[in-house]
Every structure is written in structure tokens, then in C-alpha cells.
Length: 175
Image (cartoon, rainbow, N blue to C red; front, side, top):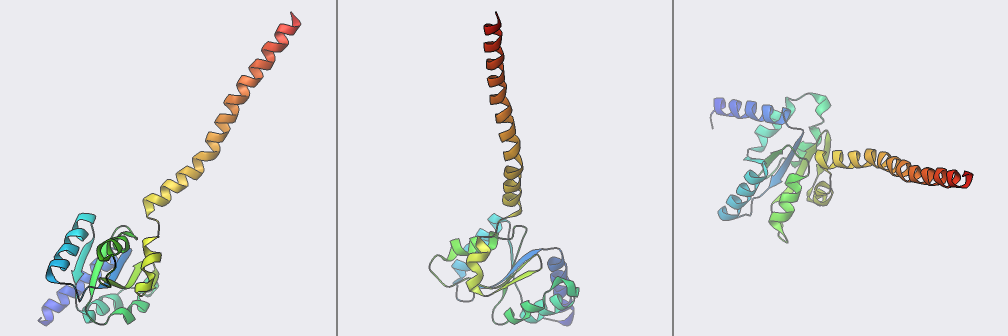
């Protein structure tokens, strides 16, 4: 790879990393070609972009980002074969990895960057897969917000029939 190609690759990585709030650093080194193709197909179907890159290029792209992004803890994960997974949904790559590997060891999560939070190591896979997506959180929030209104409407409707019943009973007594 020439210097120009390396510079171009770093620029592409910088753009992808800066435009992504969620990305995973993974290791799929022991997978066969058939297994890697299956993993890539699953990633494509779920909207995850998987890219195999050199660690030095990834590190240079991460170093070029602003300090407040907190990429520094990711540097320790940049050793051995590396594949980056870019996604719009924080837990999607973790769920895909769990589904794909079953009882196998690969692909392994080396690190994950979730909106300034850094998860290091494959032991974080369970925590990453249990994260709620933005849509799930919005659904929970809407459920919480609509519950009091539904309770109030129910109370008003049932109270209205009770009040009407009392008024009718008083009216009948008065006659």
C-alpha cells in the first residue's frame, strides 16, 4: 500500500468514525472464508458496515479526532487482525455476533464505542447486546408517558357513570 493509498484510507476512516456514534472493533481471524462471507452477508442484511483494516491506520484515524470523543481507551484493542463494524443501532452488532457464533469463540469483540462510552473485551458482549436501541427507549418512554393519561381517562369514565347513577337515584327519590 502506497503512502497516498494509506492517506486516503485514513481520511475515509476518519469520516466514517466521525459520522458514527456506534462502532465495534472485532476479531474474526479464525473464521473460514465461507464463514466470513456468511458474516458479511448477515451484516449487510442488518445494515452494518464491516471493514477489515490495518490497526495503524485505524489508530491514526482515531488520533485525528477531537479529545472529547474519548477514543484513547480503544488503542489497546488495536492489535492482531481487526475488522470494524459501523452501525446506526448500538446493540445490533453485539446481537449479530451472538447469533452468528453460537458456542464458538469468533468473531470476538475487542472493543466497542457507544456514544462516548468504551467497552473493552469480549466479556462485554452480553452487556452490549442488552443495551436498548433508540427506538426501544422511545417506546418505553411513550408507554410511561401514556400510562397516567390512560388511568385518568379510565377514572373519569368510570366516575362519570357512578355520578350519573347517583343523580338518577336522587332524582327518583325526589319524585
